[in-house]
Length: 285
Image (cartoon, rainbow, N blue to C red; front, side):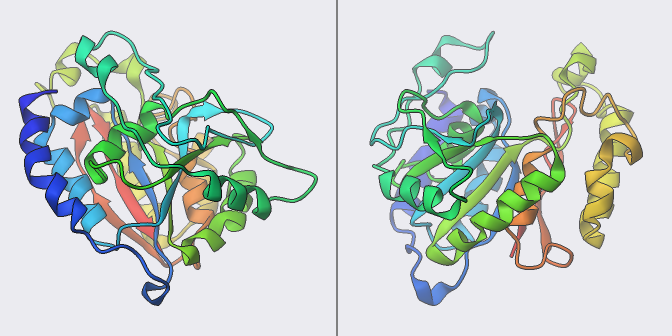
């Protein structure tokens, strides 16, 4: 555990423990899209604070459903719902301490059953009992809910098509009214192969392709223009550098699908860059 995370935890853990838990009188929780970062997010005091303050801005959820860029799988599947689900260390080249981190969440079987009940009989949901939480889930959650006291389930991305993911979000939207926090976890730009060493070290401004894509996405989100966002591969500047693969962008369509009115309810919560990549994150109501 780094000194930065130790300092963060000393302040955040008691505040999170005292956080008021959602009740039906609170109404629907928002749905989120966030940039989840690599494990070094947990060395970044500013970013951890941004995520934690975001979590404190709403009641503590009864449960959390994460749709992560790092699990593309069809048919539709969920992670293990057992208590103390292990982590997936789906990254390489980082310090050994990141591979020793834990996040022992409570039993989430009730949420698993509820997700299955929302799906058509023709679709079904398979539980991968040996699949833990990947870093698209546990890294930001260690900042948002550092006590690991909220049940968490991951749901796979069953398609890369925005329309299919919007429809999935609409099916999941009912969970918001039940105190479940829906999180699409990706990164607004993710052109890792095109980063230079000076970008990674933070010694240069973000690359133009990252800045241009971020500005384009911010404008489309502010206007609620889902059609434009869905046509990103043809319309967005900075492509294909901003997203040589689409996995870190497409979780936002599940988030938008879960909104009551995605055309007018986007609120940006985090901006800025990490290693030259856009951290832009938002919530919908």
